[in-house]
Every structure is written in structure tokens, then in C-alpha cells.
Image (cartoon, rainbow, N blue to C red; front, side, top):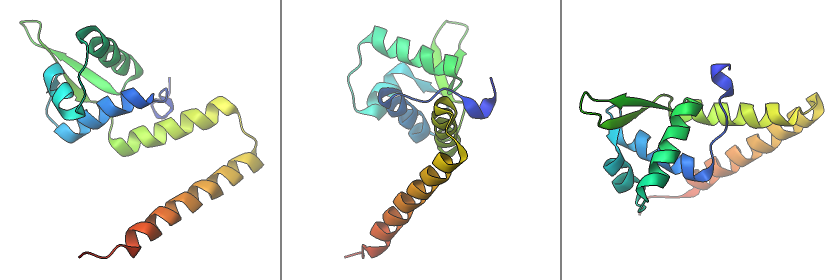
Length: 123
């Protein structure tokens, strides 16, 4: 699999990745994922989601000699966004005109968000 064509992330997976990115460069324990995500996780659900993120190439699993698992983000937030967009477009096999239209729409959204941020003035 090309590294820039990782499978996209489900919303709940994205939440876990946000928790990993918030934590920084260091490894994150299951407990820290729970604290950073602000969500209560059933142990089996969290384990399954983290395993899936490892399989997709978004997390790296670090296991100690005692069998304790910690995780570290394998990709940055921008890399994950790029990968998700590429996967989405590749899956739809859009023609050149459709890709051009999608790019224009995305640029409009970016411009609108920049304008909204720029229009806010600090109090």
C-alpha cells in the first residue's frame, strides 16, 4: 500500500488520533487516550479501535517487556488529512472535471474559514 493512500479514518478513530496528537511525541497509554479524548471507553472497544489504527498505519504500538502497550502517532495531522483526502478521491475514481470541481469547492471552504477567523477581533 502506498503510504499516502492509507485508508481513511472514521470519526471515532479521528478522535483517538486527536488524543495522540495532543499528547505530543511521547507514547500514549490506553488510560491517557481515555483522558485526552474526554470519553469513557469500554476496554474491548478501545483495544479494537487502537489495533485498527495500528493496522491502518496511523499508530505505532510500543509493547514493554511486561506486556504493557503504549501507542505513538505514526503520522502527523496534516499527513492524515492528506491521506484521507487522497483515499476518498481514489475510491471514487473521479474524472478530471470532477476533481477540478472538488478542488474548487475545497478552496472555497478554506477561504471561508480563513475569512471567518480573520474577521474575529480579540476583545
